Length: 537
Image 1 (tube, rainbow, N blue to C red):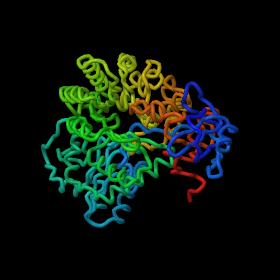
Image 2: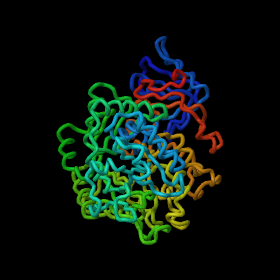
Image 3: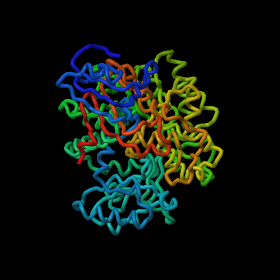
Image 4: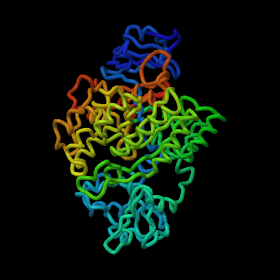
């Protein structure tokens, strides 16, 4: 029950505790001392450890779980987007335009308008154009991304600022969408986005600090205590600044670009991997784009675009070289692959690197792993490759994915159950800003697979549903394993970090379709309450 007999600082009682530990999966109460879990047991046992100074938190029959780990976020982008124009739920071109117009009226002339997270599938699939918004944004460059981040819309002012040529200028691994006259329409996909990105001014440090604070508040309200951030060296500098000031409230495993493996090797050699609040050692690469942007690399053409089978954003030779060198440096390789061709390519690279570099505990990861060729599913378990997946995408993309890839390929799309049955260790996340960083919605999605439009009440590809406990493990122990931290977090056991969430109902004992109605009541990180619904205004 207990690791040591010391005065406890927090006692969580009257709960339905799901520990994530096979030997003791259920309990009634949890005791915390400082930033560690002291004991897990019955109400009577935990109350007996309390002193007059102990804070007693009554779970009121709610579910107590390990803090949720979101294994794939873009943390600063999410924080920045909270303060930008909101387009995710714009359902018509007119609404899309009016929201941009209204937001532009609130900012100074010359200010870049970014973020947005629009989804053209909301109005039938027609891509927006710069001509839609040029007249309502005459004084502001606009560079707003589709919700998946793999394509974005620039207005005329942004294209002029970036000096985009009216003809030519094509980019390997990217697409400039053109109008009937051959001129850029305003849509730039994958690597072509670099043309506009280069012209966007960097936010000042104070704005980045505010974005981080907003992001930490956002995820705390949703029960997330740790994130795996997919970003850049400049992002890491923001996290380090907050860490040095003692301001981190979310634990961060910060990945940097795979191509910079040598810099990370030298950085780790000089100062180590960090601590329980901020860790480094991970490298993030890309094979392809996204399904929604028609840039996912597929073995066969898209059903709705028979001349198009997606693209590779990096060459196989570069991906192999970076992966091999990073692995030789004992760094953690994490690679984005969405289409079946991309997944197959990266699995082949992982297999080759393991064979050439010899056995060790690598925990190679494929991020998203969305549209898998049936023959590649068992390879995840065989190779020990972690599918780091985002279940919310399944109920979002499920509204339209079959028209893009057809019903046959859909059978192994977001193949949670098949991957679990292969022996793979699932790690779940959100891909926030692309999707909400809300584990309860992710659990709902993995368990029900009911699409957001409610047109699949029994689940889209229902044979790929998993149980609530499977999904909980993917958000806790699976996430901890995916960042080499299962000894420190991911379950409720004496000696582990005091990262705990209290939910208002037991997710394992309610109808699955009601899971997304559950509410986070408390979020505790390192023994500190960072969210208390009872005190929220």
